Image (cartoon, rainbow, N blue to C red; front, side, top):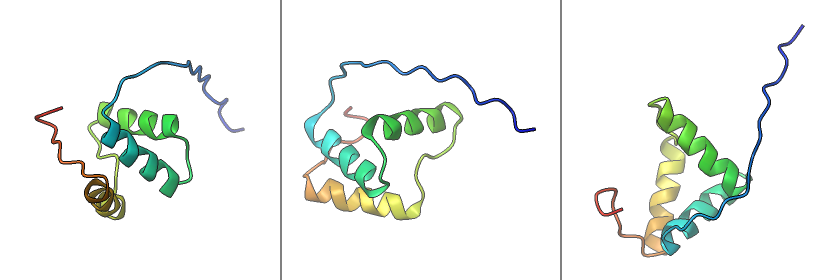
Length: 78
């Protein structure tokens, strides 16, 4: 018998985020055919576990989107 699924309760939130970062995140979510909230949730959960959230293909796509949207910010500046 499979285990019972965990209860997940999601809430609506207003989060301020840099415009170009948001554009890249939306592009990545679209590439993976998921919602923006699901993408952010996945990134955070991977980070909490010390695991990289993206594979090589997605990282290459992110680099293309960073160039396309002029996203030159780094983690040190964020």
